[in-house]
Image (cartoon, rainbow, N blue to C red; front, top):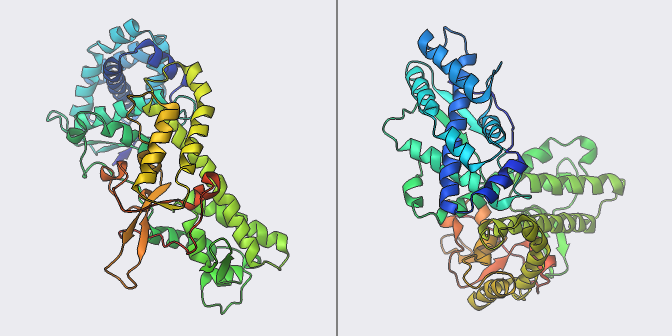
Length: 451
């Protein structure tokens, strides 16, 4: 397989915003973005073929000359293959993001000619692998605009998947956040675009998180291992303790379980908590106590919660794009959304809450910040980001206890995972407890997955 050189270009912020403002009609904007991605992908693949040695690419002279002429005409001379996003940026800037200029450029037959040349060449050579990443770099500054662009890219690729005239010799891999899939799920043709075969979710189950954490600990230098060599567990070997006192709950918790349930099983969160504990070990000069571990975990977990809230706000602003069209107005709304979100969370009152409280969370938020006809559902968004889970009675393995399922534990597929499942009881994630100021349960929760 020929792998397209990995590049981390991002869509330029100003053209991204300008296009959103220039094309107010969502359907026209989607159509324009799809055509833009088509043109950019064709240019990227064309430059890739031109950069390969003659013997590696079955590209006869007439086709090569025609391809060179089109690339020169559309983006100028090139000395190396350019990425899809780089090609997209060039197209946008060369037209000053003018709708009429873009439409004129995208209506050219050049893009179909390039596609046909690529398809003919790829049928007689090794498959080409193309990766598109870092599409969310502008999400914080232009959430609606960024998600519009990413949704259109996914639609473009899935249309190509079902196009009988397109072969399977070009493999395009795109990484997006759950927010994008959540937005795309509301598309009227989502079921046509979605396929288990082509859509894969990055799952971090509890067992995967535990394996990752233990592997990281096993790589620590000896000066950070405070327990005896013959300790009964790796965590006791690391910290010198097997449990930590949780005074708020009135119990002693297994240290590994305590740390993991204060993450969403995401590697970055695990690493950051691990680094904080290692800092405590260095600072303690060999006198690490259980309270040091507890305070480090709680402090970093709260930071994770506040960071997750900002991502939730991005998600809300993106879904509410038509309510907050003005970029300037939307920027001013961010603080109001944050305050409304925090107030809504506090209506839960307890770490574990039932359906009436879930409805109160959604209604409080909707009434305080959203338009009356808005379809934004806060509890669903919190579920998507692993901040609210539901309780499930596990009757298959003793003891028959309630386990909490969060969306980020790999327990739900990408389609079902966009809506908080109906349940008798729900639970706020540990990272939100200090933010929501709710009453904490007196027993330690068991966080599980349907693995």
